Image 1: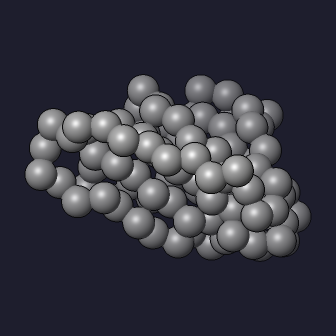
Image 2: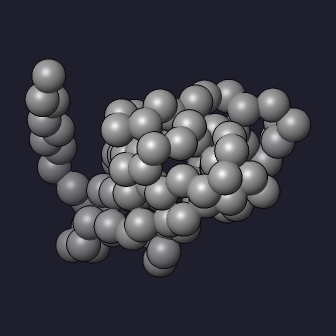
Amino acid sequence: TDVSYAVELESDEQVYHRHMTLTEDWKRLDYGWLESCSMLILQNVGDGIVEISNTYSPTYPSWVLLPKTDMRGCPIDLATIILRSQKGQSRVLVTIYPR
């Protein structure tokens, strides 16, 4: 299933794309210069399972991202998102659409 996303942006900021390599230690989301977003897409491009949580409850993952899948949402605060690989290393493609 292919899903598209369309929204009128409030700024002239560019879409932010970055690959993150994750280990078994929690790592803050790399959101570059953006302070807020209209859409966050996390795509697991590796073979491992990625755990996603926030800094308010870092002991337990809130979400798991299976290999070759993605998730989309509009987080209230990008700075609170943390990620890690469940085992070994994993790679995630981060795409952030500005407001």
